[in-house]
Length: 194
Image (cartoon, rainbow, N blue to C red; front, side):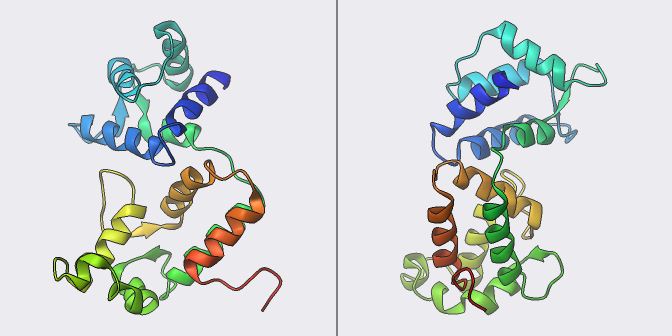
């Protein structure tokens, strides 16, 4: 696990999107849509992200994750291992934000949900104001930024939302500041207020 933590730390030096970019790269390599990568693909992806790790250590990580010993690993599972753990307080405020965005309570955020919650904000987006984007394109751009990298489908599940904010969370040291940031960003009530 310390090897995976070392990879995580190096990816996060590229900002909160480091893990997300690696995930996108793996999805692009997945020509057969198996959601699996071989050792060579893992090596290429890790090295192209600037992660410094010996090939023997990376092989050890790969072998540990290749549970069925078929020569490939599930890259979604690998990304989950890389995702930094979060405190219960952070998970709670992320879930609170998701619940606010999921207006129709169907377990996923879609543009129709965002249209209800963010219609005023869209009209202030620079690309909407300039006429470059429509309201739909502006909402979809926001939604795609939260979606699983490389596979935006117009729907963001709770897990995808948590995954996105796990990356953001890794760049914020203080739980209280993270809570304040989320509440401010999504217009959530301060903790303790009903």
